[in-house]
Length: 256
Length: 297
Image (cartoon, rainbow over all chains, first blue to last red; front, side, top):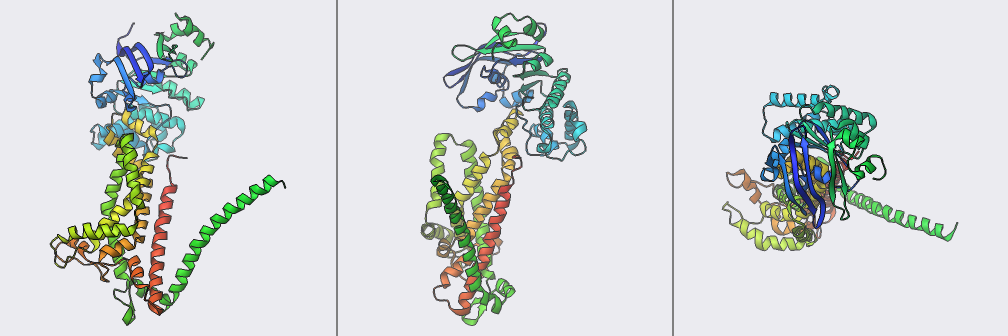
C-alpha cells in the first residue's frame, strides 16, 4: 500500500454471543484518506466500524479476538476514553444533544477538562467552521441543536466530533437520513476534512463510495452469515477492475 | 344498519359513558365539597381562614395556617429525603442494574406502593418515632414533622422512582451513544446528557410525588403528633423545627369530622377545598411538564 496505516486490524473476529459477525478481518486504514466500507445489509460493516472506537463494548454479549491498532498501539490495551478522544464518530441518524449549538460543540472539550471560556469559544468557532456550519449558525449559537435542519444537525455532529481533535473520524452512513442537497454538502465536507483527518465511512450507497473515497473495502457474509473482508484496494481499482468476481457482481448491481 | 355496525357503535358509547362518568365524579366531588364549604368562606372569610393562626372551633376561631404550614413542611421534608433516594433508585434501575437484579429490585420498589398507608403509620410509630426521640432537643417526643417526613418519603418513593425511571429510559439511546463516543464516561454521560434530557419527566415525577404527599392522611395522623400549632424550632438550630409537632390539612379533616357540626363542619370542608385546589395545581403542572418532549417533534 502506498500510504502508511493510521489504524489496522489483524485477524479480527467479533461475536454476538455465539454468533460470529466478523471473520478474520484484516484491513489497513490509510492516513488522511477516506476509506469506504461497502457491502450488503448485515455484512458486518457497521460492526467493523464500531470496533475502531470500541463502541461494540456497549453490548454486553459482544466478544472479540484478534487485534486492532491505532498508530501501532493495540487499542484494547488503551484506556477507552483516550481511544475515543482520538477516534471520533458520526452516527447514521444525526444525534445532537438537546442542548444549544454551542454546548453541543463544547461538550467534548469540556469533559476533557477545558474550562477556559475564550479557549472554548475558539474551539467551538473553529470546529463549526471546519464542519462548514459556522456561517449558518454564528448569529445564534444559543439555539437548540435540535432546532436545526437534518443536514445542519449532521454537520453539527461532525463539528462536535472534530472539537476534541481526533485523528480518525468514523462515519456510519452519515448521509442516509439526509436529502440529496444535504448529502452533497456532507460529501464536499469529507473531501475537505481528509487533509487533516483519517476518515472511515460505512455506506450503503455505492455511488457515494465511488465519489468520495480513496480506498474501498468490500465485505460479504459467508455461509455462516459471518462478515468477511472480500477485497480492499484503491477505490478506482475496486470499481473499475475488481479482482474478486463477487465484488464485480456487487458493484455491477447483480445482487445486494 | 347491520348487527355488526350496531355493536360497534354501542361499544363506542359504553366507553364514552365510562369516560364521562369519571369526569362527572370529579366534578361532583368538587361541587359538593365547595358547596359545603360556602358557609365557612362566607362567615369566616377566605383571607381570615387561610391566614388565621388559631384553630379553636369551640370559640369560633377557624384559622388553618398552622395546618397549611404543617402540610407544607412535612411535604418539603419528604421531598428532601425522598427525592434523592428515589432518583438513586431510578438511575440504578435504568442504567446500572443488570437485568437479573433489576427484575428483583423493581417489583420490590413497586410493592412499596401497594402497602396500605395505615401500615406505614404503624411502622412509623414503632420504628421511626422511637429513633427520632433519641435526638436531644427540649420537648421532643419523637412524634412530629421529622418522623412524618421520613415515613412520607418512603411512601412517595415508588411514584417518583418509577416515573423518573421511565423518563430516563425514554431519553433516546442515540444521545447516550453520542456522548460515549466522545470519550465521556458513563457517569459524565448520565449527569450531562441523560439526566438533563429527562429533566421534564423527572420534574413531573417529583410533582406527582408532592401531590401524593399532600394527600396522605392516616399515616400522618399516626406519627405527626396532630397539635394545632405553627411548627417552631425548640433549640438554637433552626432545623429543630422538624422536631415540632404539627397537623396536616388532611389530618385536620380526618380527626375532627366525626363530631363537627355547623360552621365547624363547614370549615373542615373549606380545608378540603384548599387541599383540592393545591393538588389540582400540582397535577396540572405535572401534566404540562410531561407534555413537553423536546426531541420528539
